[in-house]
Image 1 (tube, helix red, strand yellow):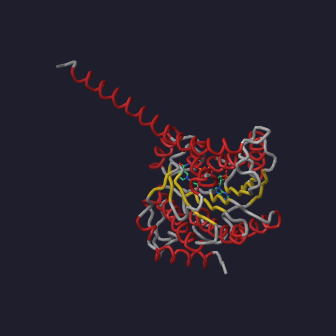
Image 2 (cartoon, rainbow, N blue to C red):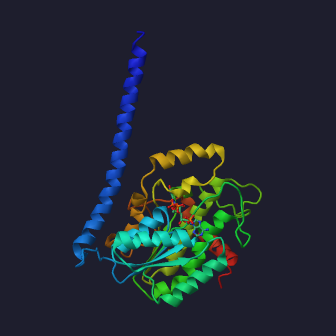
Image 3 (cartoon, rainbow, N blue to C red):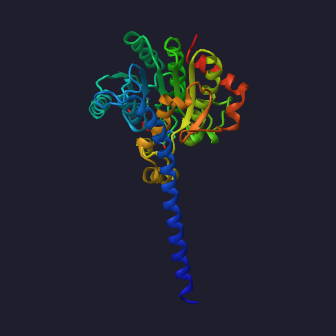
Length: 335
Ligand SMILES: NC(=O)c1ccc[n+]([C@@H]2O[C@H](COP(=O)([O-])OP(=O)(O)OC[C@H]3O[C@@H](n4cnc5c(N)ncnc54)[C@H](OP(=O)(O)O)[C@@H]3O)[C@@H](O)[C@H]2O)c1
């Protein structure tokens, strides 16, 4: 009896560890399977003479937040498929370093860099205008840049930073580039949201969280806004040949978890950095939505693991979608 308890505990522990390992393997295989399937088809159809996968040759793709994490791997994946990639970064040194690496790793020289800090709506306007001066078409726009903030801080325009960077900047950028996208059909918009949107609440009385700021609530609200924006935009784009979808990339071990966090959230960041999937895996659903023939014509949907998924119940409420659209248009002075 004395020895029974430790034996039981170690048995249960061993069983739990085995189950955990099996679960991790299952998740990896599942993500890998859907990626490989779509990639193999594209590769089969499109191997170029120099060995570069040319499935996206001739396409112009913009990726925001392209110097790090999921955005960097998305830009690299598109460059490997032969696309002209326009990386959007806020820091010149980081942007140029990533641009050099992506050119080298992909063997594709058509990798451009534009700079914009999404904390400023003027910078977003400048970005759209610079892009339009350089290019006359846009086949894929991946709105990926995003962050969260331990303290409530304000953007250059005086808006709560999470809402400004994660939602208002991509709302404005997309709207400013819509005519270019419509002139490039079939074109695709991919919005990187998060399952955090499931916990999102849009408090229209205090969207700026000036009364009470909580970091996770601000992040979840901004990611719910990404989803509501996707659905409202899909309705507006019906019949134009431009599709728009959003996604959860998974819990991904990236720099996003290196932000200074309140003490009670630090274990979450540690777990995500340690157990999170790689940025390469995290970019798979973005790449799938940006390139796969499987989702040609599919619009106004939420995806995870390259599969359609249900988003938060409130995200399907068209009144909420339209209210957010109206407020966002006012806040960004979109005429
Ligand atoms: N990692 C996850 O577990 C996870 C889960 C769900 C959703 N997501 C979403 O995935 C997207 C990519 O995040 P990640 O995990 O790859 O994080 P990351 O490695 O930190 O990359 C975020 C990118 O956004 C850029 N960015 C941040 N603030 C910006 C600003 N003010 N102006 C312009 N660019 C800005 C960053 O630039 P700097 O390098 O200069 O900071 C970086 O390039 C985000 O939208 C995030 O919300 C991530």
